[in-house]
Image 1 (spheres, rainbow, N blue to C red):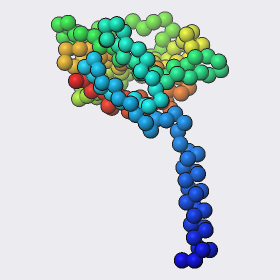
Image 2 (image 1 turned 135 degrees about the horizontal axis):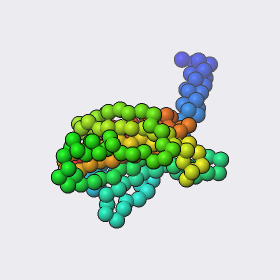
Image 3 (image 1 turned 180 degrees about the vertical axis):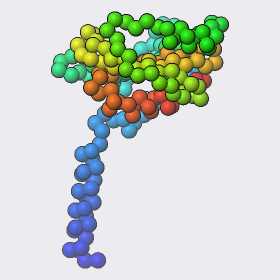
Image 4 (image 1 turned 90 degrees about the vertical axis):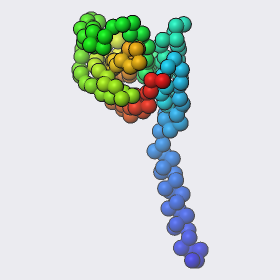
Length: 178
């Protein structure tokens, strides 16, 4: 192979690497962190922050903080772990389904999914959230396993919620009860 035929190959390789780098996600979702504690584990993006745990260690939240038009915006995953305390699964599901919505919350979907081999119930809402000065979307997920009720909330601005779905799926699909 002569020098003239190597130059186009090198050029193509450099161009390919440059184009690949330009399409990378600045959100650094390729790195993953793992949370393990309080009887659960899950993966979440490396650029997200383990935000807080209540003093009773029954709430875990991971967030991706940002701002839009000067307003604080949070995309987050939160799980609350509530002891079942003798409540039957059917009674807990009935209470969940009879929950009264806060004023201004509009339910846009109702689904079921599987989390850690258990049926989970998911409701998604749109709300004009005054805390964020914009329309937010919240997805509330509920399931029972090993004597606990797991209440999961996914939160993002309505206009970015769909683009965050792949990240939410990573967290939900990796969620395990220990």
